[in-house]
Structure formats: C-alpha cells, structure tokens
Length: 246
Image (cartoon, rainbow, N blue to C red; front, side):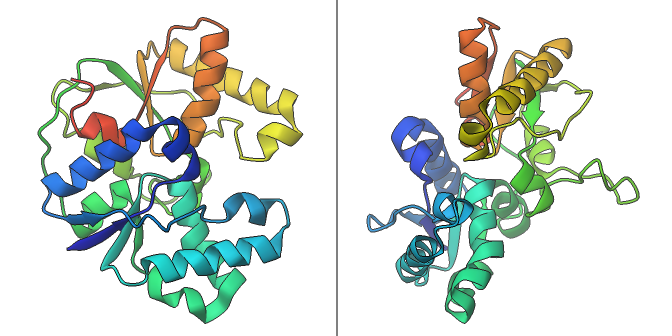
C-alpha cells in the first residue's frame, strides 16, 4: 500500500509532531509512506479568498504531485475536503486521479486499513473537537443537525481503542470552534467569542486534553486557552492514537 503523505502548511510550520505521528501510524499498519517534497499548499486559503486562478494552480500542482500513489493521506480533514469537494469544481476532470483516493487519517485507518486495535494508552480526560469540514463534508461523524441519521463518529471509534482513554461528553459536541480560516481574520471578535464558548464547554466537561482531526482548530483554541490560562492541553488525534500521550 503505497501512500503519499500530504502535510498541511500549518502542520509543517507549527505542528510537525502531528505529521510525524501520522507517518508512524501509517508505517505501523503496513503502509509504505512517501513524502513528496514537491508538495505545497492545497489551495484552500486562495479559494476561500476568491483567488480562483491561484487556487487552480495549487490544485493542478497537487494532482501532478500525488497522482502516482495508491492513496493520499493527510492529518487534516479541512485539506482533504478541499481536494475531494472543491478540486472537481476548480480543475474539473483533471482532479479525478486523486479525488477518490485521498483520505483523512481517521477514515483511512478505519475504511481502508480496517484497524480494529491500537497499541496506545492515555490516562487523560479527553474531549473531541469535531472539525466542521470533517463532520459535514467528509462525514467523519453525524452532525447534530441531522438527528434522523444513525449516530457515528470515526474519531471517537478510534479513540475508544486507546487503553485508559476517558472521553468526556460535551453539551455542543460539533459546534464550530470559530477558526474558519480567513473568518478568524475577517471576524476576529466573533471568532474569539465562538472559541471561548468551546473552551468553556470543554472545561464544564472537566476535559484535560482536547483532541481533533485538524490542528487548525486546535491552533485557534490553544491560542485562546493559553492567553486565558485555562490549563487545557491540545493534541492532534494521530498523536494520541500513536501513543505519544501515554
């Protein structure tokens, strides 16, 4: 199983441990992992800003870089959602060689590798930050706005395989953290208020560690938490599944 690893810009620059944990997880489950050094941004910031030409150039470069792999895996639901849902609109049929084989790490472990057990432990009280793109575009979990559907959560399913894990229940488990990429820059006050609401929800549930599929959410929440001395810790789900939080 030859996997091309796509690492988002902010993980590469600020949270390399999440990328390394993803590599180790994949290798521990029999994948031959390659990191194409030609990779750049997926183009999501440009697309969100309306810079369609720049977004298309980034998308075509992504396709050229990753089309030769059996699968493309990333520790970011947001970037994967960009590839799977926006590339066909931006570059049309040129995206077909990567769209169907690009996966967020949790869905890849469950749906492709078929993981049923993990060699990891964690003694923390853990809250899951369900990122919007992962929940509502990739369908990593049931959104609370769709109560008629069967309830499921792929991140939760994997975390329940971690020895000693105690998952806490949130009052609003899939509410947006307020990051939203450019939204957090254009609407600073609203973004921070939304983040504060999430932090209060985590603390009301007595969480010690907040885990997510997207470091972008955790970057936003972690910044707010540290400035307010809330005492919360944050980790990408790959780090917990890999046993880095034992």
